Length: 300
DNA sequence: AACCAGGCTCTAG
DNA sequence: CTAGAGCATGGT
Image (cartoon, rainbow, N blue to C red; front, side):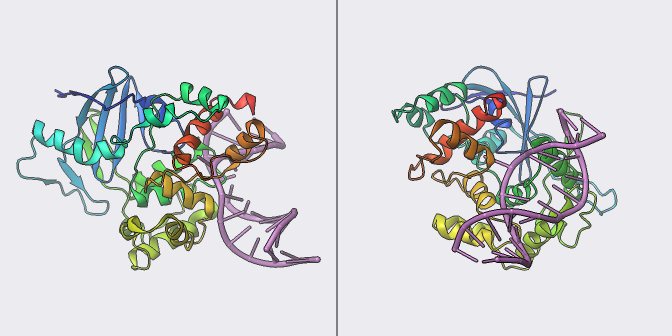
């Protein structure tokens, strides 16, 4: 039996909006159950009410590395995660992942005298900027360029199935795949993931990391400008992809990734200019605007 | 069945 | 330094 635990998120949270707001490509929803994976933790959620969620953290039961023939490592005493263990994982991993400490309500209520933004905030109530794993974010946004969101999703899934570790999911009653490590992608044959011309871009990122020329965890303490520059040293990473990584993995909330959609938005509603360039919450504002736009494509 | 996708690199001027 | 072509493939 699946032991769901209910918790109250600090403020409104809308899982359905989060997973289709263009910031993440792996999370899924089926029959009211949401699945999130970060690093080696697999989380299932149900939306109970505006603030309340039911969660289940998958146990770390079976670990099978790709390539290691059918060896199953059962951790001692991992029959089930104790409820304290699950609570701890929620606090340590998942609350930060959902940016649970930040007060979006305050950001939403700041009066910027912007009617269109108000519309987008109403429409996007409950959105959060996720704090995703830097490696996963870097790779997925490298391969996102010139791809539609559905195409990105299937590409990422192929990467995971071919090179990621498996975890047996009690909820789904089948194996699910973690995002692959840099080591697992090092010298890997990436020709069956629909990456097209982006294969050498992904390879360059992976090589820099494995060979120690790029330390993603060390970037955390860099000022934003230097963070962006460090990311852009990777072949195939320009200002837009670097900005996405800065915002979605390093929580640099003042960064606004400028893509075709944001350009359309500035054109249609802001006389062609971005008025939030200096706003410390610009990245969050961007997410409301972006989310509204991709759900009202006919208006743009 | 064309058309375009949460861009970037490289080259030409 | 800026402008523009070219890029591999899948989803609609």
